[in-house]
Every structure is written in C-alpha cells, then in structure tokens.
Image (tube, rainbow over all chains, first blue to last red; front, side, top):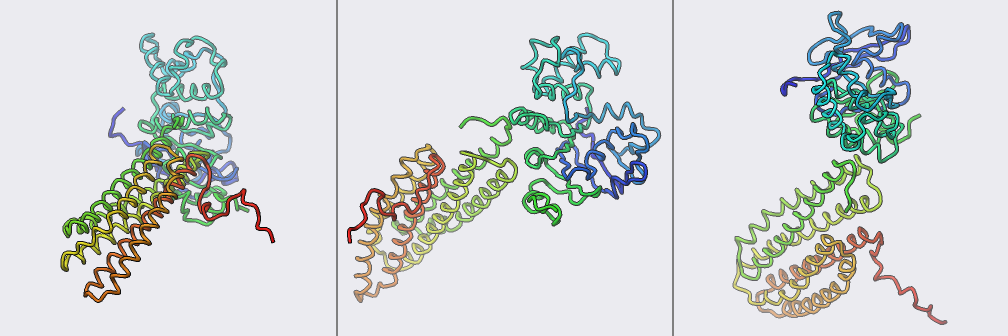
Length: 256
Length: 233
C-alpha cells in the first residue's frame, strides 16, 4: 500500500433513483481518506443507498441507477464503464448490519476472499489470515481454534471476523452499515475501538442510527434528510454547534 | 481508575487531567512568585507573574474544550461524568486564583515603587495558610482524597480569622496620618486576595469530594446541624 496514495472519495452532484423514485438528490461533498466518516439521518434518508453506491452494490437491484453526477475514488470515476466491479469491491470492502460468517471454519472465513482472488500458497494464506485477524483485534481470542466453526463465536467476535474477512483482501476503503446494531455495549466498544485503530490505514465510512456512536468514532459526520445532504461537518462541530436547524432538531430529538 | 475498552476515551481523559495538573502547577507558581515579589520587593518577579497568567488562561480554555469534547463524544456516566464536571469547575477556580496572584503581583509592583515597606511581612501568616489550602486542595484531587478535600473548610476558617485580624490592624494604620495610606490600602487588598484564594481552594476541595464520593457538600457549613432540636417557643 503506497503511503502517499489518496483514497479521497469525491461525490459530485450525485442523483440516484430506484426506478422513478429519486433516493439521492444533488449530493456534492468529499470524504477525506484515512479518517472515519459517519452517515446519520432518519430511516429512508438515503444514507445506506449512498454507502452502497461506493462499491456499486446497488448494481444488483433492478432499476436502481446513478441518474446524474459522479463518484470518484482516488481520482477514478467508479461508474465508468471501464471499471472492473469485482476489483472495485475488493478495494472497497463492506461490513453489514448483521454479522454474516459463512458456515465454515474461522480460518476459511478469512481465507475465502483471498482464495477467490487466486491465492493458493498455503504459507502466504496462513500469514495473510493471521495478519487480518490481528488487524481486527481478534487473533488473541481465536488463534487456538482457527479451525473451529465461525458460528461458534459470539456476536461481537463474528462481527470482528467479518471485518477481518474484509481486511484480508487489502481494501482501501471499508464501508460499515450499522455494524454494531446487533451487539451488546462491550462488543460495541471493542468494534468502535477497532474502527478507531483501523482509520490509520483505511478510509472508513459508517452508517449508524446510534448518534452517540457517530460522535465517538467519527472524525466527520454527514446528516441526511429525504435524500439530501443537510450538513457535513467535523463531528465535534456538528454535535456541539450544528450549522442547520434541521440537524439541531434531529440531534436534540425535537424533529417533527 | 480502570481502563475503557475504547482507548481514545482514556486518551481524552488523560489529556484533561494532565492539562489540569499543569494548570495547578502554574497557578501555585504564580502565587509563590507574586508573594515573593511582594515580600522581597522583586519587581522583575512581579512582571514574570503578570506575563505568565496568559498560560493559565489558555489552559483554562483547553480544559474546557477537552471537557466539552469528552461530553459530546463519549457521553460519560458515573465517576467519568463527575470527573469531567469536577475538572472543568476546578479549572475555573484555578484560573481565578491565578488572577488573584496577578492582582498581588501588580500591587507588589506599585508598592516596590515607593519606600521599602517592612510591614509587608505581616502578610506571611496569611499567605502560608492560603498557600497550604491551595496545596491541600490539589493534593486531595491528585490523591483521590475526599477526606482531605472535606477538611479544607476548617482551615479556611483559620484563614478568615487571620484575615480579619490583619485587616483590623491595617485599617488602624490607614487611620494614622503617616503618608503611607496608599501602601496600607494595597496590603488590605493583597490580604483580601489571599482570603479569596482560601475560598477558591475550598471550592476545589468540595469538587474533589463530589468527584470521589458523589456528595455535594457545597454550602453545607451554613446549614444548621441535622440533629439540632428546634427551638422551644
């Protein structure tokens, strides 16, 4: 990984539609690299739709499309026809709301993506799995049972395993869609501490309904409403002195 | 204190405490130097104190900023919440103490412009008591010692007694037409600053009791004792 590489995400006048329904309207903002950016907003505001735009997961939904505008990652327009979507998804990893380990061993879960991308060498595979589990702060807890079923792990461990699986293929950006919503406070704190550590190497975008979580882990926070970006600010600024009344009403719970 | 799983929370709390302790060190140093400037007629030292106050002001802003960041980001509860609230209030008290030190330094500078005034030594017992109160207040915070924090009120009463006594003496001097009335007035105000430093130190002790024991003992010494029977008609 080149230390001077930029993984800045530039969103320019982005419109996105599901059929005739416009889900995102005229979004323009830059997401800084090697930092944590949180997306917050009420249900249906478009934050998860936008997250899935960054690795083109919406391509799988019939009728869903970027109707106008662009997203550039590291200067490359990711919706350009020349872009290899499989490669894009390798570089822009994703962790979902509910941990979704495969019904295989812990080792195989982490090795899955590596094997998919052609890694066959046993020693290199073992080393890559160990590195990914270390990065996900899970190695010490699972190193003696790598070949046990991943389904035997706790919910928090399963979610960190999914993060390890995502890290194994060396992404540049990690998208997290409510990664802690099914976890208890201790497991949540472990994942949040992990996110804070990972930002030294990765650009992280997290969608969360938990505003406290956004305030804890994010350097920047974006507030969305009805498919529009209301405010994008440094997290401390947004939570202590929001620029827009709509943001303030949402944060204070006086939204209505 | 046990560690948080989210380590950045611990980092933020550590920064807050480090800045508060630096502020306390500078405040004590300002008070020491201001009084030495007066007692040894050292105008350069007085100027040093006046210049150093901006560092304390800056630290007060920093402590407030970090405290607010912790409140916004981590939503502290229980002893963490009390630590943030107490630290921010202690910082306000320290800043005021440093302001009093600057006031003393400015009066020292004026007194030093006139004839040597041997009577400045009359302030030493008052200074020793006020300095001891500030030292004990910060020791109670640093050593997590609510008993020491709670003990400061009694020491402050002794400071008040010394202050009244000295003010009476200085007022008598003021009534004597010896041409030094301005100097006596300066000493009255220095004595008043030392008395206020005692009060502010008591506040710090009370915040430590709140931090360590979750008890609010402010203004309690003004309440009647709980077991006092009501007066009979």
